[in-house]
Length: 357
Image 1: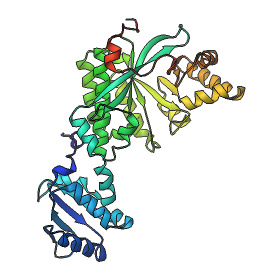
Image 2 (image 1 turned 60 degrees about the vertical axis):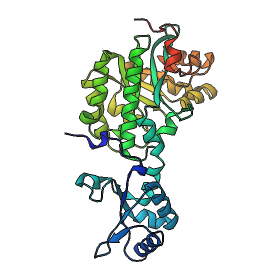
Image 3 (image 1 turned 30 degrees about the vertical axis):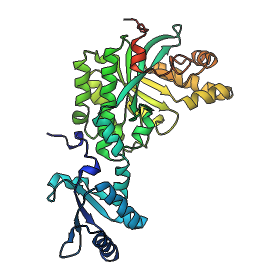
Image 4 (image 1 turned 135 degrees about the horizontal axis):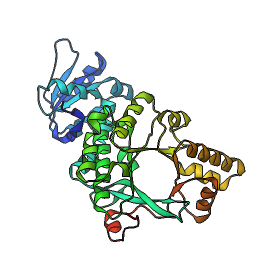
């Protein structure tokens, strides 16, 4: 079955027809009056329930609407932009409010970035605290490049992905980029890859290309750990469990990221039973600067995870004192600037393999 989300949406400047469903009455008349004043070609249906207009530049048209409508009117007016005067049935799933469309407009630069392939994956080592800080693998961290070559953080990229189709493509390309980068760089250790559950509506459809990439690059699935990154509360744990089961059935391992901060909590830990638990850097920082009570809590968590076969990872380790503290508390692995900053693939390729075969 074809995946509608797999195709990136067109940038707004490529679309030439607008279909509007404003609240009847004052809002509709206001839009029609301003379009007439600006010589737009438009028409309304007999019942005055919607309006269609030809637009030379959809970006300017959206800016016009946002300047014309109040915030509540923009939230109540629905719009569909198309490259044809007769949109297909499938396009009607892309109807959104004018307010949402303005946010979507801000994502046009991201669509262009993805189409032009201006992205890569940096990597950062993860070390074994009980084995002389020997690296056991790397986390592969998505990065974009602005048109002038400036490196763009994941936050800058994902915060601009307001359209679900952009988010789906962004997360999918981040996963595949990580796989491809891991395959061409030295080392044969673990490969940690982030993914956002909110971008996966059907594991069999959405994750197929990632699984295929792992096989095509001849990476053993046992080396790959997918990290659950969640910036919003997970309302449907059954759906998330389905994603985890899909990954495990394919031979991959699972990590729960940023534990102790945000929305990854004890309920998520108990439900998913991950192979790895990554303690958020804020938790590690508090333990390093706080009293014995906080460190005792981490030690108790580490002991419980060990009993259940879950390996723990301390994030954001920036000095030797913090690394030594985590080792004393029973944390298995660590990651942070003390062991190495995220490194561009060109720089990583110039170094000898630091993960033994």
